[in-house]
Structures are given as C-alpha cells and as structure tokens.
Image (cartoon, rainbow, N blue to C red; front, side):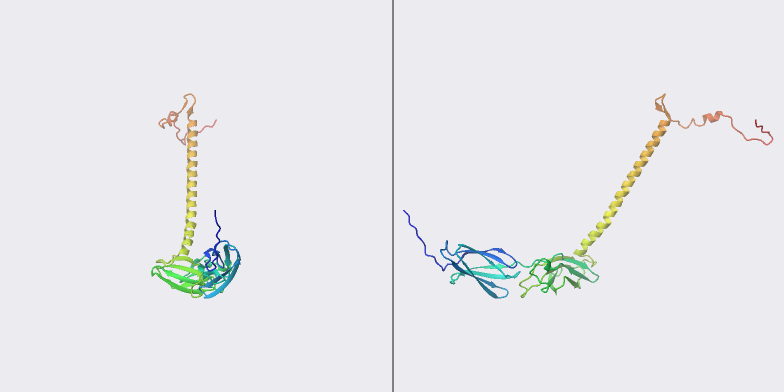
Length: 294
C-alpha cells in the first residue's frame, strides 16, 4: 500500500543555488532554482542589481514556470562591482551574490625609448581592441621605485605616450599603464607593466637591453661569418699546397723511376759533375795565336 502526499508550496522560501555562470565586461549570466520543485504555475522573480560603485539600483522582473532559471544581466561597466538579489515578487526571503565585471584589457606593446635626460613610454591604443573604451577616458601611469619601495602616480594622458623625467641613477623602476580609473579609483583597467633598469651609467634599461642584444648580435654574427670564411679559405689553401707538393713529388719520383730495377733512383749529389771532370778544361784564347775557321 502507498499514499501520495503533496506538500503545500511555501512562497516565502528564497530561490535556491543562486550563482554566476559567466561574467564578461558588460554582462553577467546568473542561474538559480525555484524555491520548490516543479512549480505548477508561473512564478514572478525580482532581480535587483545594486551598483556598489555608482550607488545606483536597478530591478528586473522574470516570469517563468521552469524549475531552473537562467538570466543575463546586461549594461554592466567593465571593472564594476555589483550586488545581485533574487527573490519572489511577493518580497519573500532573498538569495544574493556579488559580481565583479571583467575590467578593460591592458594596453598592448608597452615600450620605453631612452632619451638624453628622460624616457618616453609608448603603447597601442586600447580602442583598437576594446569597443567599450573611449580615448577621452585616457590612461593613467604609475611608477614603482624598487630601491626606495615607493609607488608614485605620475599622471594621466589621452595620448598614447608619456614623458618621464628626473629618474635617479642606480634606481630600478617599474612603470604601469592602464585605462584611467573611474569613481575614486574603483573601476580601473588591467595594468601593462614594464621594467626599467637605471644602472650606474644611466644608459641601461629594459628597452635598451633588447636593442643592445640586437646590436651585439649584429656584430658577432658577421665576425663569426668572417672567421668561418677565413678558416675555409685557409683549408682550401692548405689543401691546394698539399696537392701541389704531392703532384711535384709524384712527377719527380716518376722521372727517376727505373723500369729495369723496379724502383726510383735518387743521386746523393756526390756524383754530380763527374762527367764534367773528364772533359778537357777550356782555356782562354791568346792574342798571338791565330784563329782558323774551317
């Protein structure tokens, strides 16, 4: 035997399992479940979005009979902070959560160019990849001195470059560039960071290191190439001399080879001129001896 019992729905219960599914720069997808399983009628939910930075509120109404509800909150600001409250329309118990919108990306291609008495920071415009960024918002630049352990705010600009002066010799600096913070520094873009090493000469930096490594490579590679070419030419010359000496020795040996003895015969030099000793010595002619020509 069995019996079916149907519980009376309690509309005073809060929505269950409220959580964020996905958060972007300007939207957030949230999800929750109804206060009880298998609602038999449409349920009206109130979704309140409180902007913790601007101190404003927005309320959206969602009407559905589904046990699982998914809703997209739009018109968020990059880097914003929000408090989301979901409850039934009869103002029952509520479920809440906090959402932090994804901030704007960091500027790309941040680099340093060293001048005589200052440096220049350069970067690409954020508007090239962020449709939500307006150049009129600008950028702000910070500097961290690792030797003094001090972070300083250098200023802001609407340009894609910034001049930094009065750097101290022997100090190491880190520069950050980001979309300008709004509302008391609560909504900022992601920072792009670059290290600048100011050594004793005042000439070395992170940016110039790359240039110097390139210059060193430009000098070393040709030198190595010339060394290889010189070694190659030296081997060729040695090989040619070896071949020439070998050929000369072969020709010399062949010229003294005796087919009758089957070997080469070389003179010691003592026998040179023996035949000349047997020939009569020619003496000079006297003036009183008549010369007869036949």
